[in-house]
Length: 146
Image 1 (cartoon, rainbow, N blue to C red):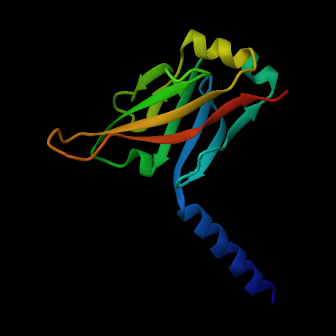
Image 2: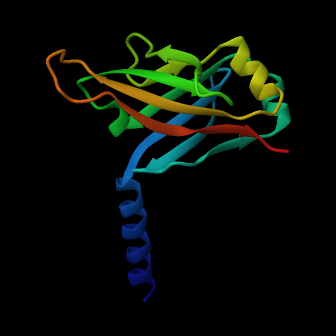
C-alpha cells in the first residue's frame, strides 16, 4: 500500500513539473535567492523576501528556463512598476541563454522601499519573415514581506 501511495505522489509531482511553462531562478548579489515556477496561462505568482534581504541588494539577476527560452526568438525582459510603461527593458545576456541582469537603480530602490516589481518576457521571432506575433509571457512578481 505504501508503494502505491509513493508511486501516485511521484507521478502527480512529475505531472505538475512537466506542465510548467517556465522556471525563473532569482539571484541577489550572485547568490540564488529563490525560484518561481509558473504553469501555462498563470497570471500571478512570485517571491517575497524579508526586508533584510533587499537591504543589501546590489545586483539582481534572473535566469529563465522552459518554454519561454525555446529557440528561434529574441527575448527581452520588461520590468513593470505601478505604471503601464516598463521601468526597464533588459536584453538577454550575451552567451547566457535566458539570463537577464536587472541591475537598475530605480528597480533596486523600489524593492528596498517595499514596492513590488512585475516581470514579463517579450518573445520576438528571430526570423524576420515570420508572421508570428510578438508575445509577452508573465514571469512573476518580486515583493517584500510586510
